[in-house]
Length: 394
Image 1 (tube, rainbow, N blue to C red):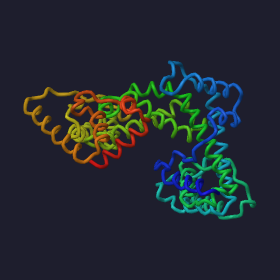
Image 2 (image 1 turned 30 degrees about the horizontal axis):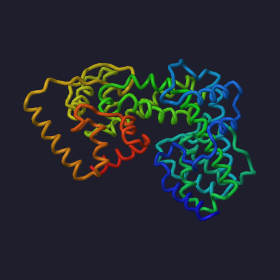
Image 3 (image 1 turned 120 degrees about the vertical axis):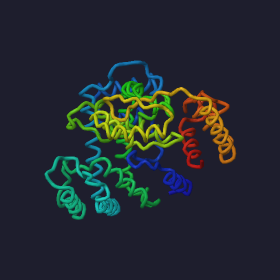
Image 4 (image 1 turned 180 degrees about the vertical axis):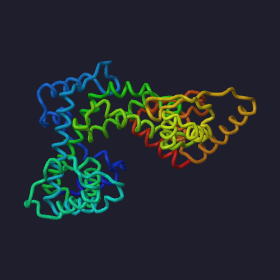
């Protein structure tokens, strides 16, 4: 391996995402169309994907109905499962991969009853763990891995992350690693297909976010963030769940929007608090509703509306009439906050924070990440990164 390639690999490992369940791979050189053609998809589905990818991008996709049909969902889910099965079988064949697998499984108690295998089983969590340890301790030629013994996605993702963290340049040149990396690339290509075909679902769900989330996430941001929810759902979905992909993915989309929105607030609110409040309202538990209302109202100057929502975590706030004393206090807090931002943050980071949260001189005009990225002529990811760095510094 050349020195330049070694350096590239080391840089890539250091920059690999901290989100474990979104599988990290080396920068892909093949175009999306070529990767789609390499998958074992039907001609009808392949043509739909390639045509849609050529004419539109996720943000400017024209309004269309549900792009994913039942047959499409079954075909994609089957392909995801088969690639997860190939991954499970391959990690048994190499000592390095086998050791990484055993390390993850040995620490499975940390997952709190986390299911290991795809197939249904009458075994308890501890019995399933022991079965997995036995399976990956014995010679791989003794018995093949059955489809039911395919890893659940989060287990697979942790094993892959473990393999990356213990790899070196010699490992990258190994045939088995390249084959495993190719399987992960296939899984990511299938994930991108789901995202492409689910844009209309995300846009529809993004319109349903309420005031508490809109304070820190605009509609455009919610569409972008919702795609991460689709990505997480695509790795895990299978038709044996008994529901359509849109139904299965909706929960992941709402969770991702909720997590990002609450993390981006100046006054933090726990996602668990929001979920518990929504659950209490739905169950009609007055005591719990009152308790969580107090917590939420302390974190937000609005008055909580006692409304039931069909979607957990979607709640609304009304703004009360402000008195002069409140307005003076607000201006003083703004002045202190602006001073802190100017002193602690670099000029560019400070300007991004001011634009995102509508702080002076952009008072009352909070801008989305897309708008800010256009102003600075950089990617949305770069703006997100600077925003998160700034929030940690302040």
